[in-house]
Image 1 (tube, chains in turn orange, cyan):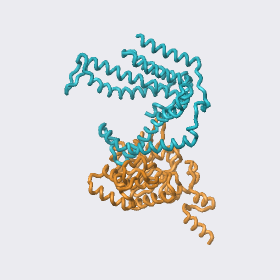
Image 2: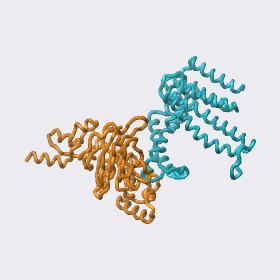
Image 3: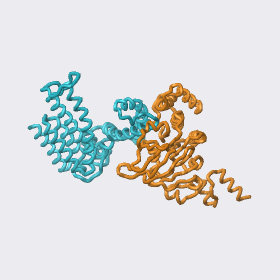
Image 4: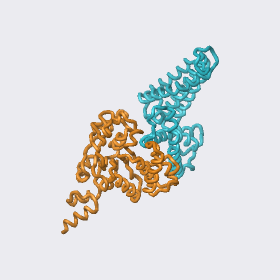
Length: 263
Length: 255
């Protein structure tokens, strides 16, 4: 679906992405992890054409993003920004969802229909003012506005930053449901617990280079690789590794591993 | 825009001058552009600006050249607009819809845009070689401007790059939603930018409100003129620089 073919990106005479290659297939749930300044946001912006590669190619369904406009790519790639206030620009939730829909859909009746569906799915009052809502609610409105457009791929740039646990889970469960329904997800995150709980594949980035690309269990069980990227495994994995358990990433995994040892 | 107003650290003579001297010199250079009607004099003042930028260092010079290039683009637009509305003088070119290009129109419009460029560059140069806090402090210490006003002025300048960055981020977010900011049609782009004023306004008000609360919580209203620990003495080199500026102004006025 999306392919990075030896992609490099230079920004203000400094190389931020260096010879990165990977491929995402339809239905993937991939987490992109790395320390601050590793190039995660640059990679996410390269995916939807906000940035064009200095060298190499980013191919979306076989088409080079260099030849495509970002506004046209919006039909295929939805982008959820870390700060919802940069996205929300209308005075009611309905108008906000319709704004995105009208940009990518010509059929007014279809726009209304999709808007109603999304409002019902998220439990929003369409007339409510998005600017008077909490940060978590605004992030959900931004997500609802993206989902309404039904892009086959979603890019999430640290979608849970600044949210409490309940808000974070609300967002992630909705993203999980979309992924289960076939939407490809690329999620940039610092939160290793979220990565553990939701991603199936992990890309590790360090100083613009791809250090690791593999199944979550394999990457998270490699503290040396994470340390190289200046990252720490989640607490449950770190504890499990110290206790000599492999492939333990959740509390349930830990309970099962301890029970198996005890019996 | 933001990049043109940031401070560039350095050890040049311009960096070491008193901030008040730099402000006075920039004011003198602005006035020089307006006291003479000669294109050559205004061009000379512009060249002096570039020379001063070179004295301040390579980075400052590079920025000044970038700024000059940006000003030339903007000035071209203004020049065309201006030249079409001056109808005095000998007609050089007749255009459709009764529009004329006259020799006086060309001369006046050229002088107008050159003055604009010549008067803009010195202030940008001062901001490049002087930390914003020093300008605020010297206004309070030497010119007795109330700290509240000096702080407000400097904060407004400081917010320009922040808002420019914010606007760029908002445009990126909207482009990713399918808004055609990447269109080549200038007028369509302008029409699309209007709805973005809402998120920009919201974020600006939030930033300003939280900034105001933050400074008030740290005793902003208790601050008096003598509170600043740094002193800005006028040294012989400052007097020499100011004298040179006044001499230049007098010479231009006498021409």
